[in-house]
Image 1: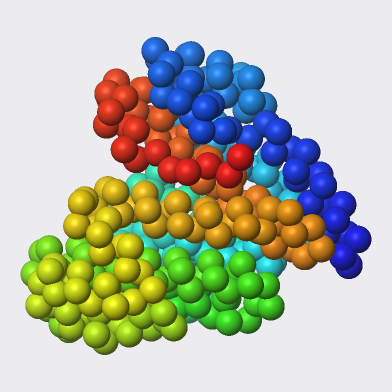
Image 2 (image 1 turned 90 degrees about the horizontal axis):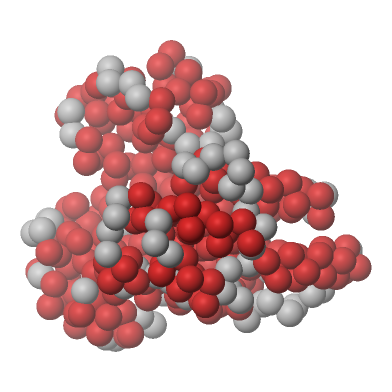
Length: 321
């Protein structure tokens, strides 16, 4: 088994020569238009011949990534943790489109563990047993809540919390430290984001009780209680946790905090880069590529909409290479 990982990690390290560096990201940012940006991406191995649509370009690259992972690893279900977000996104889209009868196919995304079509059909026909077990109860609760209250926000809370709890469960089941840490950190930071937004908009303690997912590194009861009292109370609570730095970043801006969250996860991934005897570097590589795709999408969309460089630069994340 270690030999398989050694080969897989070596293959991925070779492919990382074509990954974007921070310097490449600056070149993209400085390009005059989408055509120039796509030419830079083509130099790095992106398939830009088929389309100039940012989403389509990234869909092609994401398929290439997962094809490579499938070639290198016999059982890729260990990486489903990256795909569950798409499943829950599609569930949210399906519930809202079915209940409100306002269907729009473009709101669904691909690359989940179950197809968007399956999710939509199950919700439309109320055949929740057709869904994977981890989606069934949440789907039924979300449909019931939206039908009874008409509150789209409550529907979001139900589904978003279920997704976070799913991540935590994946982390608990894994024997890989990076996956455990990724799940815990992702959920904790998501809780802080919910608390920060909610404290700014005057959400109640009951809202936080419904929204926050219990995790090891935060006392979510205290987090929610402080957030309900206001933003300054929230910052004070964070100063006594593992996320002390988050308090100072949040005090600057929410945009800076979102960047800090992503960079913190990327720094953890980088630590596993040369650990070639476990699956951790493969997990780290996927994390790195998804971060790269996120930045490419940001820059291409900004170029299409003719946004200024300064507006984009503050949102750029730390890359893997």
